[in-house]
Every structure is written in structure tokens, then in C-alpha cells.
Image 1 (cartoon, rainbow, N blue to C red):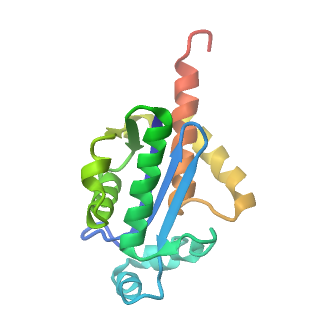
Image 2 (cartoon, rainbow, N blue to C red; image 1 turned 135 degrees about the vertical axis):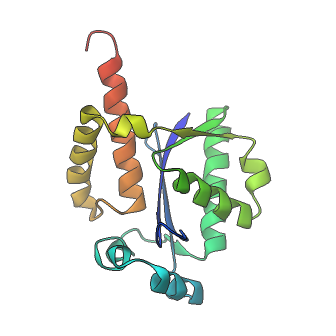
Length: 180
């Protein structure tokens, strides 16, 4: 089983988690975002770059009902989602990402929620940045972003980026199949 991961975070120098998006190859989705009304949420917005605050990341908050929570809740829900996916699949879950900080922030969040000892037994991290940089992958990701406009999410929303990563991977895998 393969799940695609993206996170949004405060800045590149000292990344602090803002949101988590996961999209499985079999079309299941998970999304959680930090409640920006909490003290931690307010502090993280203050630590965020201008890009994060003003260029579409924070502006997409609240688009998915029920997604907001504390950092602990985000990690707990992500860990439970991954454990459920692994249980349903009866196998380990490869968590694919194109930026290493995404997986590091996911792990830290799940660890802080007390589930990492269980989750690490069913997760295999997989860097796939070489796939997303291909023209086939880029075209598929762009098509995915266009389709997601109907859901009012787009680039720089963790779930949208996870879905675009899945689209890029799927398109590249299809292109590599014999007869294509």
C-alpha cells in the first residue's frame, strides 16, 4: 500500500508543522490542520514566512470541515489513519514524499501524540522527488490542481499537494508500463 504525504510548515530554517495531507493510492484521504486560534497556532503563524502567511497557505485554512485541531490531535489522527490503512491493507504502508522535512514533521507529530512506536512498525518512508520532477509527473500534478479547484483547495494546501503527488506518481507509473 502506498500513501502520499505533504505537509505545510512555518519556514525552511526552523520548520514547525501547520498541516498534514495524506492520500493513498486507493483514493483514501487524510487531512489535519493546526487550529490557528490556539496559542500555539498564533505563535506558529507569527513564526511563518511571508509566503506562508500571504501566498495561499494560511489562506486555505478551514476549507475542510473538522480538520482543525491541536498539534497532539493532528499527530494522533494521522497515526490512527496510517494504522487503520495498514490494518485494512494487511501490509506495511509506504509513505511517499518529495521533501524530507515532510516525513520528519509527520514522524514528530505522531511521536508527540504517543503513537510512533506502533506506527513505525507499519511505515516505510519513500522519497520520490525524482518522479515529481519529470514532465509527465508535472503535467499530471497540474491537471490535479485544476480539478481540485472544485473543492476550493489548490497548490500549497497539504491535501492538494499530497493528491498532486499521487497524480504525478500514477502518471509516471502508467507511462512506464509496457505498451505506453
